[in-house]
Length: 220
Ligand code: ATP
Ligand code: MG
Image (cartoon, rainbow, N blue to C red; front, side, top):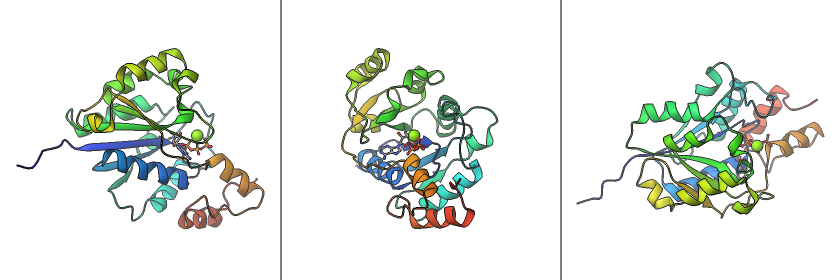
């Protein structure tokens, strides 16, 4: 008899200002690790810790639609944070996704290594794990070494550490560190290149770069 595995949803949140090939590589890596049935990409409405965005939620949503068009795994660009008023809190997003998918499904929230240091400043951060698993992925310039992160974050990660396979077979509450992605691309560098009049063609999918040029985003 075929083994029945639970459904799995992987979530990637961020400002995506703009979405870039690093985000796509992160999605590919997550697909390899977890074989999710659905990838939910959640553009932030108001990323309160960043103090704002450069382009509206609608346009960042449109760029994400273009970046993930034809992606080999089902993808949903999730509008909930851009439609919610006020600050975007990941814990609320994960709570609402959990309510939608039911208690059995495996839910994995992905973060880049740059997010580990400040994780304990996120709204109700410990509750993230009551709704989902948490997978931190390597990023050039940021260590996945837990000795560099606040004690309470390191402790949580160590105590809850599991393999991707175990996370795939449980619904929430575990952590993992995924060290095999090294893509040195950021939205900050792309915005900088565009302000300088350069075309960051290697960093952004062509359909996204066309959209940016058409709307004259990220100039001065
Ligand atoms: P910015 O420079 O504006 O902060 P960014 O490139 O960090 O943009 P975000 O939208 O802030 O992009 O990132 C969304 C999520 O994707 C975060 O969890 C971030 O850590 C992760 N991420 C972004 N780029 C990479 C990358 N190159 N490698 C691994 N993770 C990444
Ligand atoms: Mg960032």
